Amino acid sequence: MMKPNMRPARPDFSSGPCAKRPGWTPEVLKDAAVGRSHRSKLGKKKIVEAVDRTRALLGIPADYRIAIVPASDTGAVEMALWSLLGARAVDMLTWESFGEGWVTDVAKQLKLKDVRVLKAPYGQIVDLKQVDWTHDVVFTWNGTTSGAKVPNGDWIAADREGLAICDATSAVFAMDLPWQKLDVVTWSWQKVMGGEGAHGMLVLSPRAIQRLESYTPPWPMPKLFRLTSGGKFSEAIFKGDTINTPSLLCVEDAIDGLRWGESVGGLKGLMARSEANLGVLEKFVAARPWAAFLATDKAIRSNTSVCLVITAPWFTALAADKQAAAAKKMADLLETEKAGYDLGSYRDAPPGLRIWCGATVDTADIQALGPWLDWAYAQANG
Image (cartoon, rainbow, N blue to C red):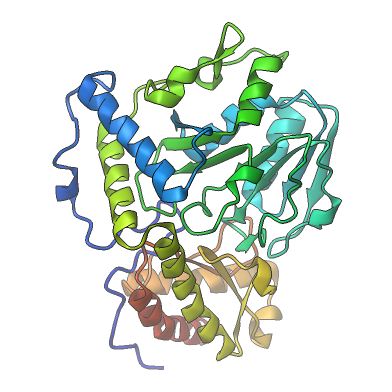
């Protein structure tokens, strides 16, 4: 098979850090408050602007609190788990590697006794009807490494007794989150908006704040995780006084991404861009006998981290290590040809390809990638 003539203009399809927004250049950082304290009037103004624009773009309720926290989405989730869990039983929902990581934290690090794990294989999700809302519930909205998401928020009880704790790092800004049904939501800038790494976002509902003020965990609390002081909610953290020093370059970059999101139609515009990207791949897969989605059920198929598997008989007949090698060969060929970067499936996932389809990726680049996928497949089968 001949190599295609056209390459994607921006072959950045990594699932994290994700593609920068179209038109991004370092020039957008020229107004960053570099050399200034994050506690100066200018530094704090920038931090508050990032938070306020986030609230407006996502439609987060006014009585929910939003903070920039350290250590990316991981840090934000850990803060929630260590600060809030232990007051009641916990349901842990997992269908991919990151959800599995939270299970490890709760069961093996915090060593909570009353923990129920609901688990599904890659490409599927658990039976949501089995969730017990008298428990706290921890789940990922979108499985970044599995390409499977929850279909909506209908399964979350409005009259729940426990807290709904949601890792939304590859869903927020691309999927419609029912904020009134979520008590903790976390994400990182490096995902859907294509920001820089190391910073997380933590959103708390009034119910989560009530838990913080009515329950004290029995374990020591590291400084980076402390959301209360003297038994009272640390409101200042959610008004721009960050726990530790953020990068004001990264804050400026986040503001730029939010402004771009506003310019393309806000949340609905961002969601439409991501859905259009998925639509291109759905047409591609429908016309290819060798490719399929890891998430076969369209209702739970991610529109951001789209995972493909190879279904050709020659491939499925291979041993697992040979399948992984063939899929890696495809990803390596695409990178060598500068047709697509970072397309390999996650190391714990079934062998295949993972293509980021979030809003910062242009649909034209997904279209241009298709012929290259065919070419790489032909080479791997050669």
